[in-house]
Length: 415
Image 1 (cartoon, helix red, strand yellow):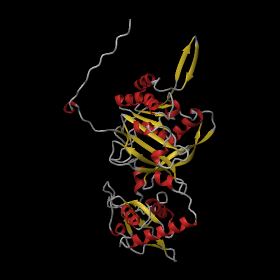
Image 2: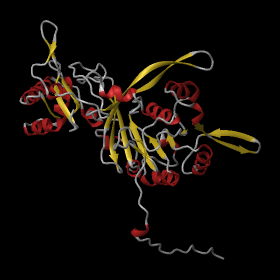
Image 3: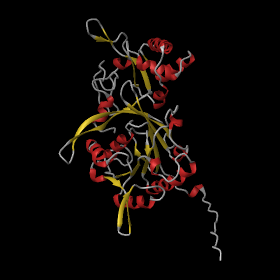
């Protein structure tokens, strides 16, 4: 006797009966700039050693203390970390300690199997162990899952669309149902020429997720940059920077371990795409770079404020035959004078401005006074500050008594 075939029927729901809701964010470093959404997956990728896992542990530490900017700010959240490549006792826990995490809210997870009185432990595999994850989430109340590295914890071939979808669609559905953030850590292909094309494996990794964060290092400054190459739910695709600082942590065996700790520096106009496309120039490229620097200086000096909107400079430079990358790299390499990139004092996006120069007597001055010096500015919280021509030693921008980024980090207004 043959088995009965399953029956099926069409289910139609008028859009008028579907309740709308606002997309919520696990991490929203600045108001209106959501980066990691709740209820779906975010893919994080970059070459090895770019600080991807360390930065995710930084966010987990903030979440464990209820200090992570986003829709769950104020709630002390648990995190489940699935299958990291690093050892927990020598690397993961010391890093979490350095980040100030509440260790009782960060969980390692494995599967224990018993057969004929023989017990063994193993890492999770997907889609096989989605039920185990659901059980763990219900027990811990976790709001974020970090899968690291995602390709090694899936069943099948990471280069095949169907295998990737079959492995992770059930886990994404679980994240949606429980309104969690799912973070899948991946790597870049060797020699990947673009951010979108550099992601290892099938294009399904990018298609399945709703946010894609690409990581890279600026070799000139030593800063780590990550850019949001995909953001289905937000209006912006920002770029941010941080540095890894070495700190000493006392381990439980009485020894000292040196581990990396994140110092988040906020927004930047530098992008991972810029870094990937940057190359070491030959003499001809050096001449092109000097020509681009000259163009930028001439353009900025046309303005009485000795600053110009970055977008206007790039647009004019393109008309003059320079690419965006040539202009951006020329700005960064400009030494005398330096061309600084900063947020406009009037909230109109990024501006490029000339750095104050020193006279032979050692007195700092600006040949032309900018609008930012003429006016008495105030912070977004209404605090009046005294104008100054000093420069923040960390962020390299003109400041008015105090650096805006330093202030927001110190006062807990950003991650």
